[in-house]
Length: 203
Image (tube, rainbow, N blue to C red; front, side, top):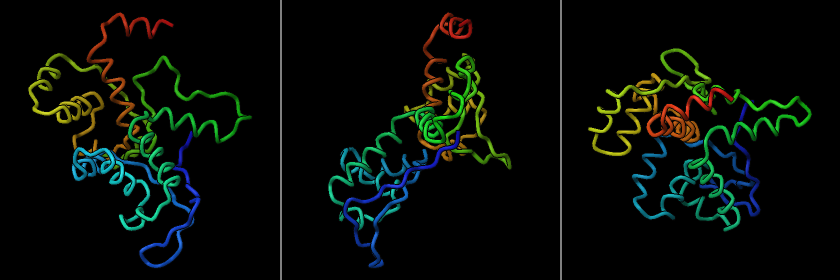
């Protein structure tokens, strides 16, 4: 169930800043902290945001990116969009499908344990390599503290750290799809009634 970022073979090769030819690009995962910084740099313009994220996802300079033919850029933008919006499970499922279609079907973690979240990319925390995180439902006192924080980002980071047991600086190391996956489950914790969780475990 391992995942590696895809390689994009360019329709039209470009010239690198060092005058070499670039015919393919090894795409890179987006990480939470780097994405946050890139979006802050870009401001509110969606095209600027995509351009900044494409620099992160490709490792190309602005000059190199500007040489891309539109179809190549559209492919990279699609990857950036998926990285920015889809949860880790989407990419992990792709990894399972591409590893081998002949293996016995393995859907990854059993759906009855939604609070055990498999990470797309392992996290190195306090000398430990984590490949999954166990989520805990937040207590009311934690959500009261969360609501006093100023921005949506601060509130999301506080409650994510609380539910995962990670420290705030550790969150920066999460890939964006891992962050997205965690938010989906934490959103359930914050907004769904007890009956939702009972019915999920009794299937």
